[in-house]
Image (tube, rainbow, N blue to C red; front, top):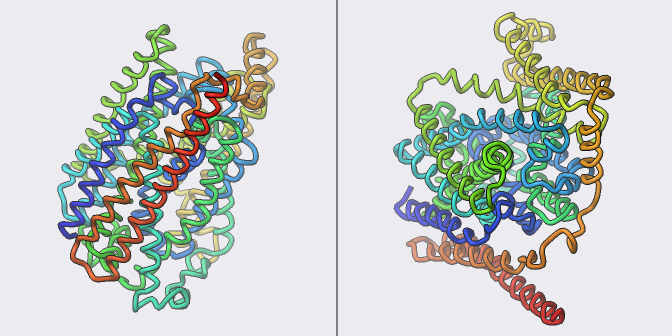
Length: 598
C-alpha cells in the first residue's frame, strides 16, 4: 500500500470517530440513545440492516469461498434475500408494533419475566467472545495482508468502535451505516468494472467463458445435486427462522416510525441481497483467474484465499482507492460491532438495570449507564481479541462457535412461533431452547466422537467428499434442531391450561398490541418530527466524505485513475447534495405547517 492509502485510512477513521460527537445531541432519552427514538428514516434503517448482514466476512471469508467455488457461494445471499422477504410479508410490521425499546422487552411481554432475563443474559455471555472474535478475525486479516502490528489494529479498531457508539448511541451506529454503505457500494461497483476490463478477463463474456474451466458455473462439480438441495433447503430454513425471530429479527426494525416504514426498510435489504452480491462476486471470481495461486502470495495467512479481494484490488486500484477499499472492509466490521455494542447496552439497561437494580432511573441516568456499559464491554472485547491473538490452535474458538450454533437456532424458533401461537405456557420459550441445546450437543458428540459422520459419508455411493460432508453435517444439525424444537414447543401447549390468568391476559394484550398499526399522530410527542434534521446531518456527512475523496485527485495518477476517483467521490458528493436539497425542503414545509398551527 502507498502512503496515500494509509492517509485515506487515517482520515476515514477520524471521520468515523466524528460521528459520535455529531450525533450526541440526538439522544435526550433512553429511547433516543438505544433505538433512535423510534423515529429514524426507513431507508437509513434499511441500509443499516443490510450492512449488518453484508459484513466484513463478505470481503474476507466470503470472498475466499467465492474464489474457490464461484457462483455456488451465491446460495447464501439468495437464502438471505428470501428470508428477508418473508419478514416483509409476515413479521416486520409486527416487530415495530410491539412498541418496545429492546427486543428482549418484547420477549418479556410475550413469555414473562423469567424468559426476559434468560434471553437477555445468555446472548450477552456468548457475545462477549463473539465481539472479541470479530475484532480478532479482521485484525488477523489486516495484519497479514498489510504487514501491520495486530496489536495496533485491535487497539485502533476497538477504540473507534467504542468512542463512536458510546457518544452517538444508535444514531451514530445506524446513520453512520448509510455513509459506510455508500463507500462499500461505490468501491464494489468500481472493482467489478475494473475486473471485467482486465486483459486476462476480457469482459463479462470472457469471465463467463473462463468460469467453465474452473468449474464455477456447474455447482455439481463441487457437490452432488442431492446434497445441494438438502443443504440449500435447510440453510433457507435457518435464515428464515433467524430473520423472523423476535430477538434477532425485531431488533433491526424497532428504529423506524411504524409498521409501514419497517416494511420499506426490509425491502432495502431484500434489494441489496439481490443486486450487490452479483456485483461483489465478480472481483472474487476474477481473482481466481488472475491469481490462481494466492497461497504463494500470502503464506502468512491461515487461509490465503481470503485475500482474494485485496489481491485483485492491489492489481487494479490506483493509490488512494485501495485505501478506500480497506475503509469499506473496516466499515463492514464497524457496522456489526457498533450494532452489537448498542443492542447489548440497551438490553443491560432496559432489561436489567431498570428492572432489577434501579427501577426509578431517570432518562439521563439510563443513557449514562448505557455509555459506561459500552465502554467496559468494548474494552472486554479488545481484551478477548488480544488473548486470541496469543493462543495457538484456538480450541476455545471452536467451542464458542459450537455453543453459538447450539443456542442460536433453538432460541430463534420459539421467538418466531410465539408471535403466532398464543396458547403455550411462559416457560415454552426457554425450555425449547434447552431442548435444542441438548439435541445439538448430542449431535456434536455423535459426529466427533462416535463416528456418525463416517457412517453418513460412507452411506453414499460414491463416498461423500469433505465439502459435501461438511455441508451435510450443517444441514442435518439444522434439520434435527428445527424438528426437535418445533415438536417440543407445540407439545408445551398441553400445559397452557395451567397458566395463570395474569399471564393469559398479558399474552392477549401483547398479541393485540402487536397486530395494531401505530397511529403516529397520537403515539408520538408534538416535537417528534425530525426528518429534516436527519436529512441535513446525513447530507453534511456525505458531502464531507465525498469532498475528502475528491482530494485524491491531487495524488499523482494517470487520467484513468483520476476519473475513477472523480466518479467515486462525485457519486457520494451528489448524494449529499440530494439529501441537502430534500432536507431543506422538508424543513421549510415543517416550518410552514407549524406557522399555520399557530
